[in-house]
Amino acid sequence: MSDSRAVTRQDQRVAVLMGTKDGAAYIGEQMESLLAQSWPVVDLWVSDDGSTDATLAIVEAWRSRWNKGSLTVVEGPRKGFAANFRSMIIDPRIDADYYAFCDQDDVWEPDRLESAIRWMETQDAKTPLLFCSRTATISEAGVAAGYSPLFGRPPSFRNALVQSIAGGNTMLFNRAARDLLTKASARTEFVSHDWWAYLIVTAAGGKVRYEPRPLVRYRQHAANLVGANVSWKARFSRLGRLFQGQFATWTDSNLGALAVNRDLISHDAALCLRLFIMARKGSVFRRFHLLGKSGVYRQTLMGTLGLYLAFLWRRI
Image 1 (cartoon, rainbow, N blue to C red):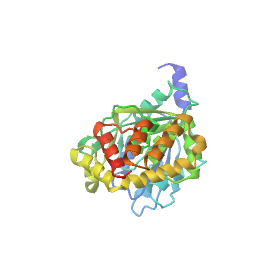
Image 2 (image 1 turned 90 degrees about the vertical axis):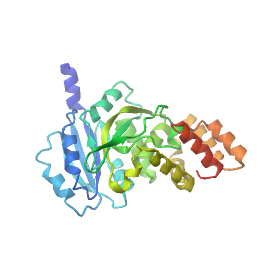
Image 3 (image 1 turned 135 degrees about the vertical axis):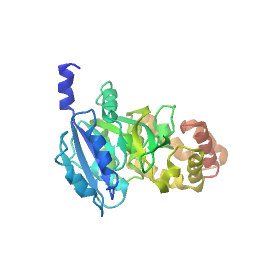
Image 4 (image 1 turned 120 degrees about the vertical axis):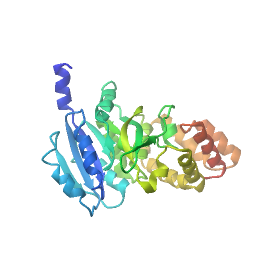
């Protein structure tokens, strides 16, 4: 590696935004993986959402070991995980070249940050950039349990309208994307920080990279293991939520958030959005016609078929 690149690495700071609440059982392992990151300059921001266990004590004990940058603990809004991450997105004190969301109980591969930054270095820094990846699922005990779905279709606004393709725990975004997220998130709340980031970055004409190599070991707890994206049972569970109308509620929330940020949306995304909104109303033939015209899609054939069936039954 050249000396010039070494200087660049030392100058480029990553702000890791970690949301915590009662994570004492696993946060130490996550902290170890953060410290082991190959990227040298990492400022860790921990927003604690009202932990009643030893989470904060464990984080504080890490101060003497944290040699990558600053470690700052702030008090979360205590309104759930989405509000906690939103509070960090809009916090003006957090300033860096790159930003990464972080959960309290995962394990990051050593090049989780560097892989994303290397891609971003090949792109225009003025463009909002978002990097995300597939995950490897682990059990509470850390035993490998499978992988999240491997998606092959390109990330886009037409996909983001109906699907969140990656967890926030895999995301890293550049300063342009953070500025965009800050402006948009100051105006509205959202269902989930990862879906919202994917949605607003693509809506504004930004670029998203989906990395097929798992860069995060995503810990699934026993009560939620069905949602680990590793089995047909999990897939049918997601389809069940679709037909129960849960996605319709989420879509309503996303559309409302986009409505108050219409000035940030590109012309192409605005045309797609208008057709999608119109497709949710009217006769069956009109809904199908407008949905097809909008170009909206999910990543898999089964998912896209489920989308059309949901439109048929007015569940989205």
